[in-house]
Length: 392
Ligand code: PLP
Image 1 (tube, rainbow, N blue to C red):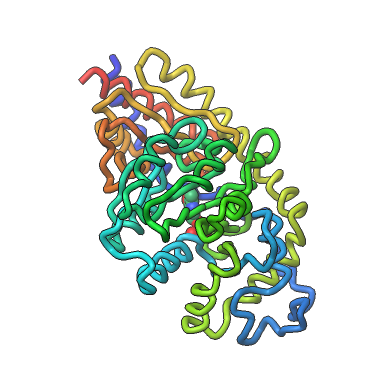
Image 2 (tube, helix red, strand yellow):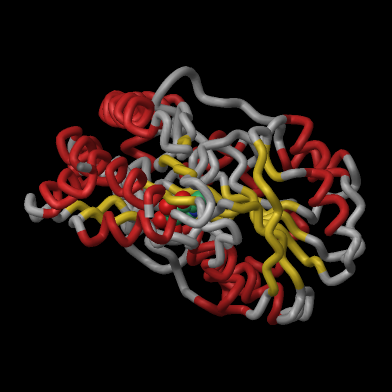
């Protein structure tokens, strides 16, 4: 019977891509006014943004990022259009300067973000999985692993973690800030990609990692990142890193060699369009109004559809993904069955270092770029695939 249902779904010849967290066209449309938002070509420090210079960003964009991350503008370097490439470059800088060495180890809360893991793999940093809990990475495991002098860093997505949508508790953050590390140059790569991306409730406010670390005498520890990719436009947004001023020196020095000037026109467009944190938050309410019905419908369908299958999923109030756990040994089968029926999920295993999900349970679904109708169809396939995989 379930086989018949699956064959009928296959006959629909679906082609639905739920593998990457893309905003829907209606979301990127929200900032189409940004393309014509430039009232002047001068930033507030008098620089003509159409020319070289302003290596670490224009003041108004630094201010907006400082408000988002709750740090001071001196702690900010505005980057280009991708926070992932800024993270990649920071690791390259730390290795180049001999602060880290290839072969050192990196803590990877898992399930986690495949691009983070790919960066570690690229640089030959050995990844160690740390289990995720409702309040962030398992801190007993983290503290124990940090006693190894080869453990040089850790990925953290503190708000609406990818893929589970968990939020680090203040206790977790304080422990990360204060824990002893055997490696003196241990760093937290603090990817605050979803800081303003709640689609329900109010914006989560968490302990400030830079302040916490500084108060514990570990000011150099956190490297913060955030991005406008899912506020304005992926690929044409603007991003930043933030850190202790002293720690930023090596990155400023590197940028000075890498470029003569960033895209300040795009920075000014963003600054004029969003103006300040309250402008960003007002804009994110419009995103939330588009995303909320999609996630809520998905949760509803999954709740009924997965009941009794042994699979489970996580509800969140923000972020871009739905994390689904199949019974052990089934995720790859479910992924394949979905693919054959025209529904593409993020590769099974991708949410773990080296693509290796030890229990073969976790799947990531990205509903944002789809219409509600497509979400319903994709989930019908997924649910039938789970039922089939469990039977086999
Ligand atoms: N960080 C996290 C945790 C993400 O989930 C994503 C996109 O899915 C990114 C960063 C990508 O950011 P950017 O477009 O700025 O490179």
